[in-house]
Image: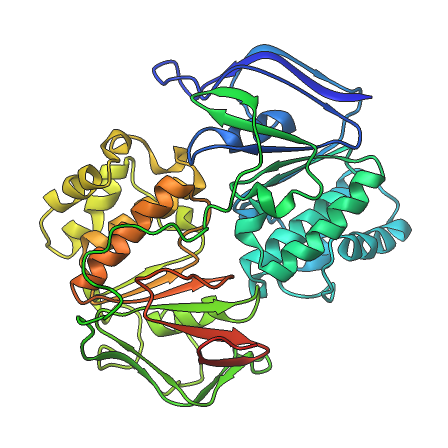
Length: 449
């Protein structure tokens, strides 16, 4: 049975802009799993929004929907979808809006959490969840409403490997129950066991495709120097002695018994599962966490404190949209240059060097998630910082953008910048000097089994 059909559908965001979707034909039936892949910025998320019925601009062509079709959508930035303060309240929100009797809501909320493979107290504060945990929470929130069609945008990029394995079991069960799925995914190979129909989106056209390999399949890019020897590594810029880390009023999240150091010119990866504390550590190093606990850490010879480092320290958070606020990409990249009295022409030069000059006049909010990540990274790179802290910066990037990001990182490293880069998974790239692992409450050097 058909749930939704698109016939000759075209869509764009403005009459002066080229079409994002062009003459799209797609039919989705009960129990089917479709996967859409394509370059960063090709319009995959726009297609999901169109299927969900949340785009407010008109489109050309016909869209037929099964009567009373219920769809659930989880976006690349699930925190944009949050409405309440606790896990239980968030999942129950839509149930309350649909008038579900109060005595039925609790059991539906608990069932939705179990179906999403998420085991949290209902009074858990949402601001304590990692991005990966939030993504699974939003899946649970959609499942509570029992949709006919579930739309997931880049789940692999948001989840660690354990989370992906659990999600595969969940999605497999949903398909057996007759729910239809559409995944937008660079790494469709991770979901090959459940995908029945592959699609490739490019230049606005949707065509039948094949499964694709992970965007983060460690594609090597030309190195600036002989990275294998790491000859440029210099003095210690981050020095952390033995410490315990936890948020105020909460149990210790992890311990670091040996401490760690980060030297000029190093690219060090910080690898850990969703919710292990990677983001907290990076924010702590940048001085943006107002913790009562005084950590025995010095960054650039000073204890971390907001605003004391100027252009010498850059922090890229997991949600790049929270760091982009100017009216155009070029203005965005010039903002901090102007603030720190650095040459504004660096911005245009950076865009040209990355082959992104065509994005210069676009508003940042119109960029894809992967494009926003790269522009936010490039804005920091323009400052030529001494320390760069990056929270999962490669999410949502295809091979082309992935290479551009590594081009930037290797350039900064060759100039003596110390880079700490977090990820759910090990990154085996020649430019990486060392790995810090955060696993089972322990932060230590190397790979922890």
